[in-house]
Amino acid sequence: MPAKKLNPKQAAYQKKVKKYEPKPKALRNALLAFLSGGVVCLLGQALTDFFGAVMDLPPEKAATPAVATMIFFGALLTSLGLFDRIARFAGAGVAVPVTGFANSMVSAALEFREEGPILGIGAKLFSLAGSVITFGVVTAFIVGLIHAILPGR
Amino acid sequence: MGKKTGKQTFQFATPPVIIATGTVAGPFEGQGPLAEEVDVVLSDLRNGENSFEQAERSMLIQACRLALDHASRGSAEVDLFLAGDLLNQIISSSFTAATLGIPYLGIYGACSTVAEGLALASMILDGGFAGAVLVATSSHNATAERQYRYPTEYGGQRRPYQQWTVTGAAAGLLGYTGQGPRITAATVGKVVDMGCKDPLNLGAAMAPAAAETIACHFEDTGWDPDSFDLILTGDLGEIGFKLCREVLAEKNIHLGENFSDCGLLIYDREKQDVHAGASGCATAGLVTFGRLFRQFQRGELSRVLLVATGALHSPTSFMQGENIPCIAHAVRIEA
Figure 1 (tube, chains in turn cyan, yellow):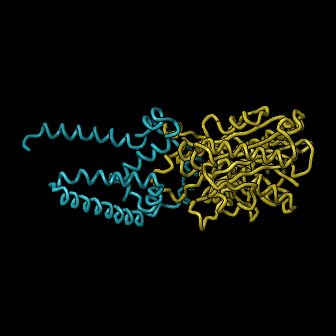
Figure 2 (cartoon, chains in turn purple, brown):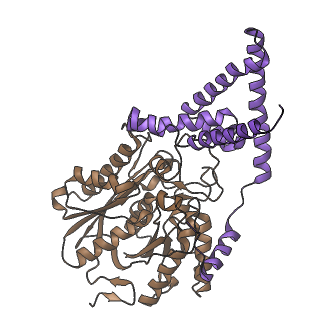
Figure 3 (cartoon, each protein chain N blue to C red):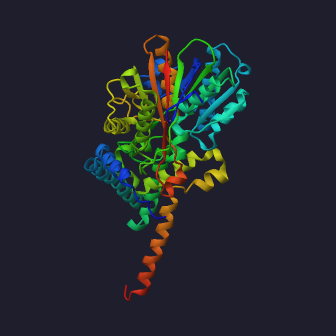
């Protein structure tokens, strides 16, 4: 749909709105996201090392149980009602890693549980995470295609 | 046609009376400065129900029953029930009407509903079509968040200009005769679209509608800002409130200390992390039927202009890239 052009009165008002609209604190948010994201990744690395040592796995195999554990914690914190409070401060730091993906699914499951297992949880589980999957698959396909066409490894 | 004055204002020959009110606020709202001036503060966001939608409905039923009890009337003694809320197909109101068993007209004006209800009820009463009309509205933080935004437990960062949807329900019983503050005039607003698209900044979208209705009320009636003890907008929040003042100043209407916004009165914005203030149907509802009604009873107020504001978009219209159309209705309440 083409964006409707603003008439001069609307354009003048939009300028006024910009004047009063407080800007999100970008630097503070970026710093907090950097630190909290770093903590999440540090935990992930510690888990990877732990599973590698305990289960005697090579690092690339040890990542799988580590990711599953991080997802578990994301889900647990969401269902305890703590994740959204942490995310208020941590922002992208907890949203970008798998913890954010877990949160988007579990929060949807909690929210739509009253609509029943099929039309509620089943259908709405991916209401937020769905586009991540869709575009993840599309991107993987395109990258795979390029990889297949380009010569060499 | 003697009751219409100017372009959009209706004056009542026999001003209808707000006889009694009932107000219920959520637990978070109960921690704010309005707690003393509502009848009931819930201890549980679900109010003992299975879903948040049922919780909202139970609050609305409770508010209506309180209003009727305070007037010592049964629901059979009420001629009409006018109510609206934010949920799709206004289910809170309609299901409440089913419980109360009062002939019902569902209305939708988003957060302007309380003023829309008061204006309509006043016309019906002054027109001689009814002797008693119950007006009610409700909103619930969790039901509104899920319908308009994200699941409640989703960890997103809130914008500094975002507002917090109030959990609460408010009802007022209006009569043709009786004791209490009276609705002497109502200005019905036009839908205003100033090109705002951001559904997280509804205060800015609604401010021009409020300004237009306020200006229209003054022009139609010849009253001015100094005629009122209080001019109270609905839920503009901090940003919308400043914008409204500026837009009116450009029209050469200068509002002084007697100008306020319900969205700034519900929470303690220093301690409660609600950013720009309160929003939702219950914002103007709780302030009007909770605080204003009590202040009129105590004789602290004699003339108030309530200008409740509503954003009339839906999640669908927003996702399809449409602007946010807004409205504001004004009612003049006098002791």
